[in-house]
Length: 239
Ligand code: G3P
Ligand code: CA
Image (cartoon, rainbow, N blue to C red; front, side, top):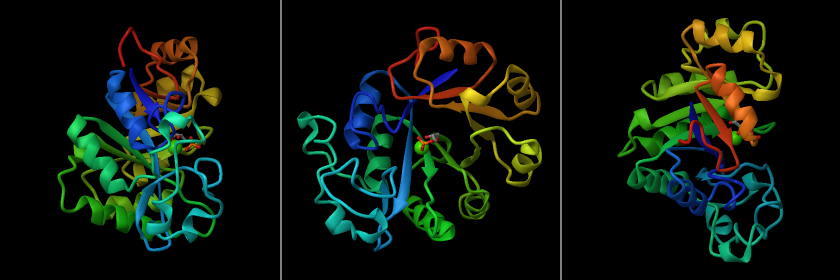
């Protein structure tokens, strides 16, 4: 089982920052998960919340900031003064660093009510077009099936995962329709029988957000392929 750093490695560095990516790499992680959204001027940035309030020294809706304004915000001091130089990264810069470090990245397409899924997918696809981001080192995921449909057309070579909280009855039909490689679910709702059924159907099963070693060990024994964690957990001593 792979242990993937959630939002970088959110318990040890400010989430969704380049510092988090470096820290995850330093600890031996080979995968990180991040969230992406669009600014008002259609730049793709790495950020989780709909507002900038929690993770920066600014206030307001992220989608109402132009990149230039957003790039001036301090995205690290809320976590610790040692990270005062951190900024909300552009996806392009995040992927460039991940490529240099040889890291795999799960990009979650974060869509809030009113956001345009196609626009976000198109902009991410444009960023990827010039390379050198290896498709096999990326995994796209979203709670929005529409988003996965757009990605299937725009970037067919990058694997996709459907994100759900609780596995729905029609999971297999949805994964088949969207040509997904993986299903991502909250570990709390998962049963061993479901885990076995997803694996038996030939899909990967990845669980969020697992912050206890005993939970990680149980999911590994159920055949789960990857967990997302804020903490430096291991699986059989590895990440
Ligand atoms: O992608 C798994 C997990 O990150 C989804 O929840 O809210 O942490 O983005 P959230
Ligand atoms: Ca996420």
